[in-house]
Image 1: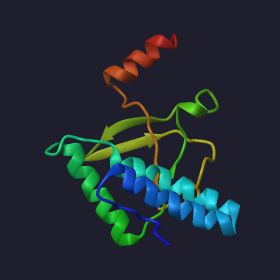
Image 2 (image 1 turned 60 degrees about the vertical axis):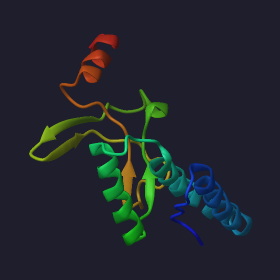
Image 3 (image 1 turned 30 degrees about the vertical axis):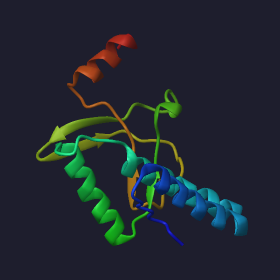
Amino acid sequence: MNLHPAESTASATFEAAAQTARAVAAECLPLGIAVVMHLYPLCALRCVPLPWWSAANLRRALLLRAIDRGALILANAGSERAAGAHAPVTLTRAGNGVRVDGAFEYMSLAHVADVVMFSAPLAGSAYNDLLRRGSGG
């Protein structure tokens, strides 16, 4: 079973993922749905175009290498679709990384995944300041 498809084009990668999801779902629909919840963020991570020589592209390549080598399971946890359902999650720069404050309600495979992907505003960023002004906070 190809749980980490990496084909030469985005469409071929998504087709390989779809074949895996269909094969699993034909035998066990709940497991097929779980596999899709892993394959969706993995394919998006692989296929979103980034400038070749950018820092973001290098970080993505390193993350994908770790995912492929470790056969890691990905999940997409929380997003705009859960807005208002919980206190906001924020990121703050700390040392050579970031600190994540807040929590998301259970979504997808977040409780069993090796890597959980989510988006949150960076404290002190122009985007975060815009969000606070827009919400009256």
